[in-house]
Image (tube, rainbow over all chains, first blue to last red; front, top):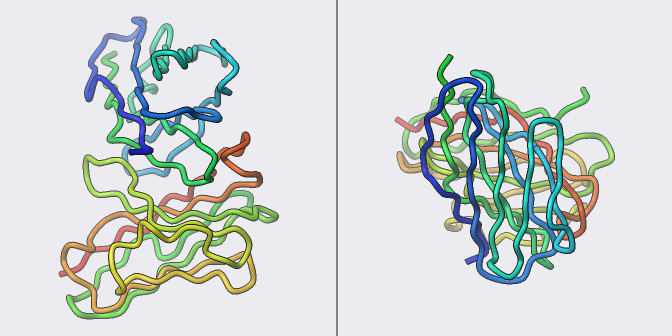
Length: 110
Length: 116
């Protein structure tokens, strides 16, 4: 399967806490992308990490990639209620077909 | 507009009817994708275009579904003889460069299709 599998399926935390979600995939990738989807909206690209990168930061987001374990993690630090959304990973291979998993539903309570 | 535009935002139809959903990508984006998303699920890949041609249509569920992009810009997803199981949000996305390189997808807000 070309899709990434996110874990956990759901995550509930308090504002100010950190949220970590994981993504596993099956075969060698070119890059891996993370997207966010607020309820009833389209997906929004968050960050892309190339296969030769191990860590990348963007604001309160930190993404790591371990190609030996075929896994990636997304860390959101100091979470806010506005971070409540579903988060999807999308491994990118030599084709241009991006396949999404079922996502992690993050709920941040004020 | 600056983003991906999808029309209609909501469509209610009766079983057996024909439906067209339109996607207007970001100007200059050569790649265009269609996904379908059911409640609580991730987006399900349907088809993607590079320019005018369908580069991969392996996600189209059956021959009732068809998509075109005749001039390499606007795309129309066509569903014939709609069934209740076709009810979902249909998402369109476009990309400037290949996702296999570093291309990211820009999504529209979706067209919610309800088949009664």
